[in-house]
Length: 261
Image (cartoon, rainbow, N blue to C red; front, side):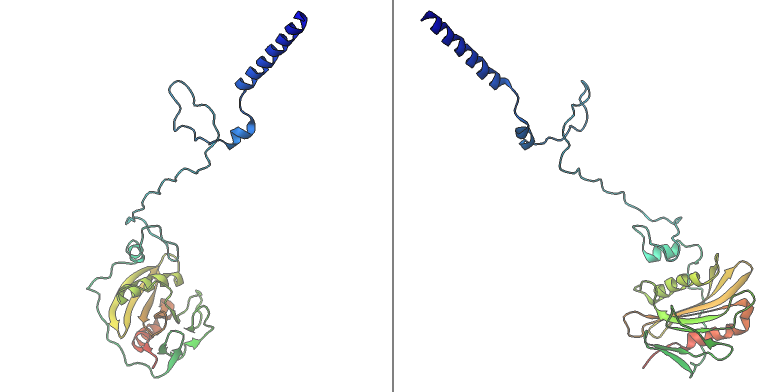
């Protein structure tokens, strides 16, 4: 019997030891995955590098971008997207190709409107139908177009109408200024404006100006007028110095733009 009791005691010790081992073993992998995830500290402790931990599931808040302040030195190019913080008028004032329009710019006397007109119903305006050597031409991308014959230099006069291609401003004068700046896209590279005349017209504004490029120049004008459509209408004429005899037609253009009715 003593042998039996000794055997039972030995079995009891083995069972107790096994129970102790179960207590000290680490948790299983399923329990670790279900537990909370802790983000690593912002900086390692002074005693050494921080221990490696699982990355946080929450993305850290992104830093706010620095504010951009427009400066006089920055000059956005025509048609480009303005940098944050710019307005269209600030871009205009920063453009060295377009001088400030002062009160010293004179008005011009306007001729009697032409009886022969082109009716542009898309912008709600009638404009002069210029006589020879002007002729109508394929309008696209404009809504009407008249041109002079080509010269040896490849330049020629052009008179077009279209819906206002730039953002309308509170002031008709400011809108016309932006429109004149936009017309530099249709002049040779390096062109600069010199103002010749500026004045209000019925339901809009007109500007006449010189465009210089190298040793040559063009005379040009814009008329921005509200024809009752979703956008104001733009009439734009330009004539190079190689066709200076037709410079007189510019005054006919600005005098002859009117609202259809």
